[in-house]
Length: 274
Image 1 (cartoon, helix red, strand yellow):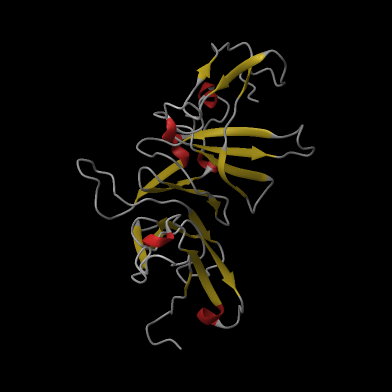
Image 2 (cartoon, rainbow, N blue to C red):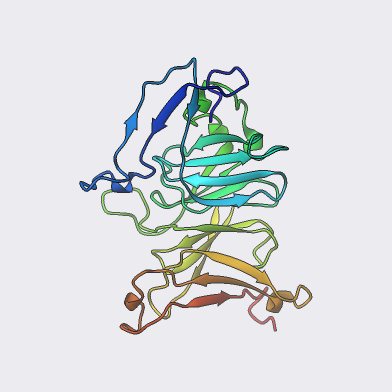
């Protein structure tokens, strides 16, 4: 519920808006997710909102849980649990700014900055709610407040013909809070699902590091995570893991009968490190 009339409480009756959660199926003539109905908005009432979350992650700093919705053009949803959930829960929405589209994954770094991979526009985006100048203005209704909190980093690679949009597809993302990769604490990663790779960003320089998997062909990752087995063993005691996540495993090199795989990444501090 949104307190859109600003009286500090939620009361019936309220505005009801039901919108398909994704633009992916608007052309589906069989009906379903693409159908939408909207009642006229009354500013004197509160508003019931529904955002189906594709992924969620808790903040390491406070009681906040963040999620992403694919409802066009994409939203971050911030849920603050409060002292007596669910009655004390408070939610806010933040619309992905142009030219970004379609968030899928979400993660939070050790400072509370949220990162999300934008699958349809080939961006890795960060959102820092501490930069917001006004969270209670009229723009809170559609989530367009706090453009200043967003930073979009477009990935590299070939462009889709006739556009300036890279052809890569970033299904998910992850933040290296504990320097598992060796690329630095809080390094954000995106899956290069269409480029056989994982992509690591240096936010200070805007430079990308590509971890390519050349064999077997068809590395289509849908996620990753890190693990520290021995914190005293340096790079040997840490590893990043990602999967061959395609539904069509027979498209992986090897053909019929090929099974999915997990890839282990370890980065030496220098080429001769032992």
